[in-house]
Image (cartoon, rainbow, N blue to C red; front, top):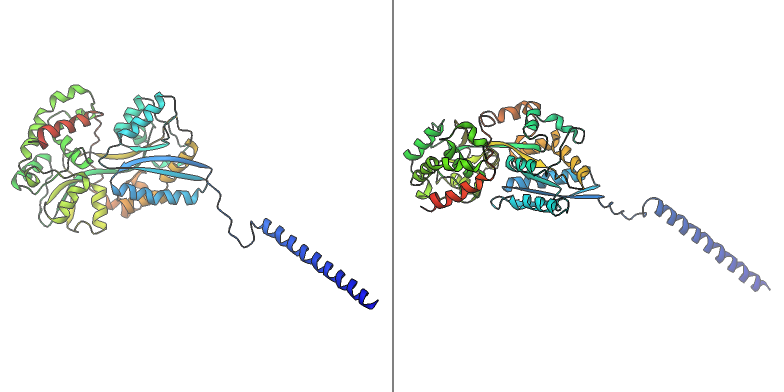
Length: 390
C-alpha cells in the first residue's frame, strides 16, 4: 500500500515538473518571438525599392560612386542602388539609345532610372522629351545649386560636380607655361615630342584639345552650334592639327584615354598635356603625379563645366531616385566629391569651406562649355582619317 502511494506521489511530481518545464518553454518561446528570435540576429529587411543607375567616366568616377552609394544605402536601408559602370572610352551613347528605344517601344525607361552624362545628352534628351523636370519640392538640396546653372538645363538635370580641361605640366621643366592657345602651339613647336594629347575618341581631355584647336578659327558662338553646316568650316583647324602631329609625342603617337597622357607626364616622357583638373588633383594627392605638377588654363579656354544626372521621365522609381539626388547634393556627399575626386562641387562654391574655395583658385574659372551635339562624333572620325593616319 505504501509502495503504491509512493508511486502515485512520484507520478504526480513528474507530471507537475513536466507542466512547469512546458510552461517555461512556452514563456521562452513567447519571449523569443517578442524580441525577434532570442539570441539569434534577425535578418535585415530587404530594400523595398531598387533602382538602376548608369554612369560613365574614368576610374575616379567609379571610385566616387563606390563611396557615395554605400553611404546613401546606410542612411536609406529601404532603397537599393544598382550601379552600372560604363568605362571611359566606350562612350555613353548606347545608354542614351537604350532609354530612347524603350520610350519608342512603350517599355518605360528601359530599366535605366538615373543616367550620368554631359550637356550634349541633356540637350538631346530635352529635344526627345526623355528627362523628368526637377524641382526643390522633390529634391530640397537643389536650393544649394546655382539657379543659373539649373536654368541652363531647363531644370532637366542635376549638376552634381564640375571639372575643366587644363594644361598640366612639370613645373621643374616648364617655368613659364603658355597663357594663350597661340603660345601653346608655339611651345609645342619649340619643344618637340614633349607634348601629348590622347586620341579624342577615348577621352575628354584629348577631345577638348582637338575641338579647341578646330574652333580657334571660328566665331566664339560656334561652340554652341550643332548644325552639320559647321563642318565646312573645320578645314583650317584640321590643318593645324596635322601640322602639330610632327611635334607631339612620338611624332604622332596618341595615347588611349585620359590616363594615357597622365602616365606619360608622370614618367617624365612629356612635360605638358591637356588633362581634366580633377584627375590631376587626385593623382597629385595620391602621389601618382609628382608634386612639381602644376595646372594652367589658357585663353580662350578648354572646355569644362558640370557633369549631370538625369532622371528618365518614364522611370517608375523616381521617388527613390529623388532621395538619392538629394543626398548627392548634401554637404556630406559634396565633401566626398571634393576630397576623394578633387572635383568642383555641384553646389555653390561659396557654400564650401574657405580652404576648399582656395584650392580651386585659377582652375575653376576661365573654361568654356561646348555644345556640339553629334558633331563631336564627326570630328573624331575626321581626326582619325586626316590626323592619326598621316
